[in-house]
Image (cartoon, rainbow, N blue to C red):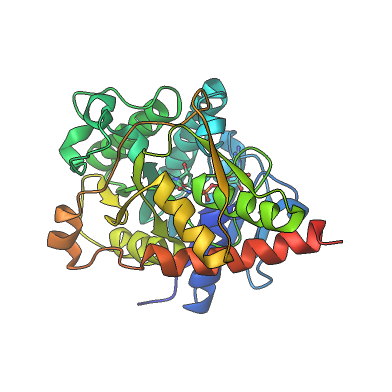
Amino acid sequence: MSQKNIIVAGGGGFIGGHLVGALLEQGHTVRSVDRKGFDDWYQVHEGADNVVADLQGLDACMAACDGMDECYQLAADMGGMGFIENNKALCMLSVLINTHMVLAAKEKGLSSFFYSSSACVYNADKQVNEDVIPLKEADAYPAMPEDGYGWEKLFSERMCRHFREDFNLRCRVARYHNVYGPHGTWEGGREKAPAAIIRKVITAKHTGDHTIEIWGDGKQTRSFMYIDDCLKGSQDIMHSDILEPINLGSNELTTINGLVDIVEEIAGIKLERSYKLDAPKGVNGRNSDNTMIMDELGWEPGIKLRDGMERTYRWIHDEYMAKYGG
Ligand code: NAD
C-alpha cells in the first residue's frame, strides 16, 4: 500500500486513537484532530500531527483536510445508551461535523472519505425481540432509527452517498456494531456496556461490596466487536469497491447477563445481581448479519468476546487501580 497523508477526525477518541497508531505503524503520515484538550485524549501518538480543533466549523475542517489524501471521519458527540438516550440534540449536532468534513474533503480534493456510521441506523421494529434475526444492510429502510443519534447517522450516510454520486468523492461507510477494547471510556457516563460492566465488577472486587447493578433485565442480546477487528475492517472497507453502507460487527451473540458471566469469570468472582428496569437499555436484541462483508471482503470480525474482554479487563483494571487503588 502506498504511503499517504491521512487525517483521522476524532483521533483523541477511542477508535480514532487506535486507528492513528495503526496508520503510523503502516508508515503513513497522519494528522489527528479532536476537540478535547490533549490531557483528555485516550492516546496521543508522538509521530502524528496532533491538532486540537472543533470540527463543527467549516474553517476548522478545511484546515484539517489541507494537504491530506484520505480522511477517516470518526468525530462525533456520542457515548453508550445512557448518553445517547438523554442527549439527543447533542448527538444530532454531529451533523455539523459530518457536513463540514465531507464538504472540506471535496473542496480540498481528497481521494477518499470514510464515515463511521452505526447499527443505531437500523429500524427499531426489527429489534424488538431478544431472539434476534441478524440485521441486514437493507433493514435500515423504511427508516425508523434510534431517535437522535441514529437519525443523524442515517442522514450523514445519505450525504456521503450523494457526495459520491454528485461530486465523485470516493465515500465509504461502515455501520459499526458495539466496538470495545482498551484506551476507551470506562467511567463518567459515556461508557458502553462492556467497559461499564468491567468497571462495576472491578469496583465490587476492590470495595468488597459484592453486588452489581445491571441496566434492564439483562436479557437484551447484543454482539460486540474488538477494536483490532474494527481497525482491519475499517481500512479494508476504505480500500474496497463497496459503495453502500456495510455492517462491520461481530456476530457472536450474547446477552448482557452473559457478558457479566464472562467478566465475573475473568475477575474470579460471583456477584449478586440487581436489575434496574427503568435504566436506558436500548433495543431488546441486535446482531450483525455478515453475509455482505463475507461476500465482499471474504472476512468478518472474528476475535472471540472472551479474549477481547480479557484484554479490555486488564487495561481498565490498571486504570482503575492507578486512580482508586490507593
Ligand atoms: P469517542 O467518543 O471515543 O470518539 C469520538 C471523538 O470525537 C471524541 O474524542 C470527541 O472528543 C471527538 N469529537 C466530538 N465532537 C468533536 C468536534 N466537534 N470536533 C472534533 N472532535 C470532536 O467514540 P468512538 O467509540 O471512538 O467512536 C468513533 C466513531 O464511531 C463515532 O462516530 C461513533 O459514532 C462511531 N461508532 C462507534 C461505536 C462504538 O461502539 N464505539 C459504535 C457505532 C458507531
